[in-house]
Image (cartoon, rainbow, N blue to C red; front, side, top):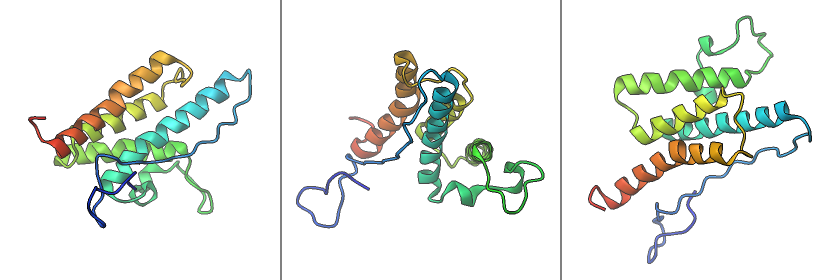
Length: 153
C-alpha cells in the first residue's frame, strides 16, 4: 500500500511514500516488566517478519518447514512465536547463501530477530528505540533512496 499516487498519473504509485501498518495489542499490566518485555519482543518478531514476507512475497506460514515446528506438535496445535522465530532465522541464511537478499533487508530482519531474544528489549527505553532506528529502519531507508534516487543522490 502506498500513501499517495504519483502526481499526474492515475495508475502509478509514488514508491517514495510507502505505508505499512501493523497493529499490536497495547494492553500491558502495570507493574509487570516481564509482560511489557514479552509484548515488545513479540512486536520485534513481527517487525522482523514483515520485511521477510515482503521480500519473499509470501506469508511466514508458507515458509515453515517441519524442523521449524516444536517436536511432537499435535496436528491440531498451532505453531507458536518460537516457530516463527526459527523460520525467520532459517530463511535469511538461505537467501544470503544464494545471494538473493539485499543488505538493507538482511540487516532489518537480522536485527529484529536479535532484539526478539533480548530479555531487556523495551520500547520505553529511548536508547533501545534509537538502536532499532539505526539498525532496522535506517538500512531500509538508505536502500529505498538508492533504488529510487540512484547511487549519486
